[in-house]
Each structure stands twice: as structure tokens, then as C-alpha cells.
Length: 416
Image 1: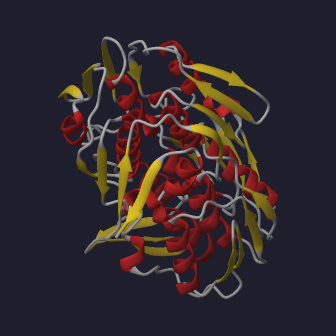
Image 2: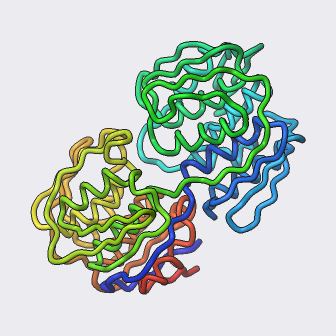
């Protein structure tokens, strides 16, 4: 199993190119199964979750041709609605295959989704939506089975804002009979990206990016070409890394509007951020100021940035408070960061972080995807050597992290 070895204390300098959005891509690949003809998707991040999805599509009978950052998916030969348990159970986003296969076959059977252990992440809103469209759902021996004689549009109100449920119901409803109205929808950029992809295939979806999405069912979808949007969380990760190391980094290939809440909070801390059309420059001058952060669904501050910002707060002047309003189990990583000198106390969904002027290298174990990235940033900012184990978590969502950081001057190596 690989680990990262980091010799910290080097300011990052240079330009980093942002990859396609993981959270878009892992939904768009299953969405391609709804078409009758092949689709080509480019600006695809080269990460493990994409490899897993590609294998599952092949197992189901589809064909995939991947080259660099592009994949062509031919769904014509899809003949199964049961992805393999050992693959589906490794990633959270495998649940998008339920919506896609239910729409295609009126039936799907898939292992309970895996992914990062960051607290309770039920799929009750997905099931509620599928059943509102006319499906019956059973869960036995860790397998979710969803089956319908036919899917009929309905009015569905989500009890909580859920990105996964919003996207999954768009997949399930776009070929259902009649009209589906989804209310209290997630508004994240990747929800809009998936809707744009489905519309390019011939779906009729309006309102993505707002509270209410209207879907008029169509009989058929065709393949198309689509470019995945840039990854806002990867962009935020390198922004925080630049600030934590007092570097000077240009983050390139982004959509600045998607980063507004991150830019606002980092600017409040005293980070200097210069915005351009598709890039921004991050520099810091002197010690950063304390701030309070409350995670919220988009356009609020993203929960996926919480762990990364904790490192910045640990280096700031004063006491900061993080309130985690999305996933209640997302502070486990702080026990690891305490080994480096981070001073943090956790009470339920609240973490209180007292800033320090110095972090020191230590052996760490990544507990999930974003926690692993936070540990890498802490290692880059710390004095001495840091080792981060279990970096398979990081590889699930970041393309070639160590190579991108090496280009910025970081002393980081991947070691067996």
C-alpha cells in the first residue's frame, strides 16, 4: 500500500491545472447508460472512482474506450441490472447506477454504496423518490433492489437537501411517463452539469441549479459529447495549500463563481486572491486571521472543504469555530492532526480550533478522501517530515496529487 512522504516548510510557487469535477463525472458515466448510442465525455479526472465505474459498466455489458482524460461509453450491449458487489461496495457514487438502470430496465439491484466513512449518509431520500415514481424497494443481505412495472412522473419533495437524491431522481425520471417535479433540490454545480449532459442527450429538464427541477419524460435518449466542469473542491484544495505554505500559486482552469464561498472565507482570513476569467492567484502576507465556518449546501460553504480549511485555521491567529451542518462524523481526522500540534476540541458537530504558529511533521493515517488531502496540506506547511498512509482515499478523488504538488516545488514522494 502506498504512502506520501512530505518534507514540509517549502512555499508552493507556480501554476496548477485543475482537473474535471469528480462529483460530476461519477454521475455522468452512469447517466450515459440511458442513451441508445455512444457518448463521449472529456475533461475526465484520472482517478480511481472513474476506473471503478468503467469496470462496472463493462461488467453490465457496455463498452468503454478510455484515453487520457476522455471516455467513450457505448451502452448498446448493456444486458444486466446487477453491478458486481465487490466493485459497487467500494464507492459511494455507485448508487447513481440505481437511477440509471431503473430507468433503462425498470429494475436495479446493487450493493449498499461504500466510500468515505464521514458519518451517517442514508439513501432514504433516493428510495422515497424511486417509490414515488412507482418502484418498489427492498434491502436484503446488503443489496438494494428497486423494481417497477413502469415509471410515472410525480411531485417529490425532498425532506433534506441531497445532491445524490437530486441527481438520482433526474436519472430515474427523465424517461418516465409524464412530468416529475422535484422540490427542495440540491443546487451544486455538478447537479447542473449532469442536467446539461442529460439535456444534450435529449432529456427535458428545467430548473437545475434552483430549488425546483421540472422533468418532462421522453421516450428515447441519444449519445452526445460533453465536457465535465472543473472540480471546485480540487481548486479549493490547492488554494488552501498555497495559503498554508505562504506560497504564490495560480490556480488555472476554473469557474470562479463556483468558488465564491471559498474565496470569501479565505479573503476574510487575510489571504490575497486575485480573480481572472478562468484562473486565480493566491498569495499570503503575514499571519492569517481567525474565522468561523458553517458548512451548508451550495451556495453555502462546502462540507468537502471543511477539513482542508481546518489546517488553515490551525495556523491562524486566534480561536476559530467550525460548525459541520452536513455530515456529523466529519471531525475524525482532527485526532490525527493533533499529532502535528493542531489544538482542537470537538463537541458533536462543532470543532473549536486554537491557532498555533507552527506544526511539526508526524506519521498520519488518512481517514477519508478530504481528510487525506488536509493531512497532505498540513505536512506541506509543517516543519520536518510527515508520512500520510492510506492514500488510496486520496487517489479516489484527486488526480496525481503528488505530481501537481511537485510542479509547485513541494518535496513530496509516493512510496510503497
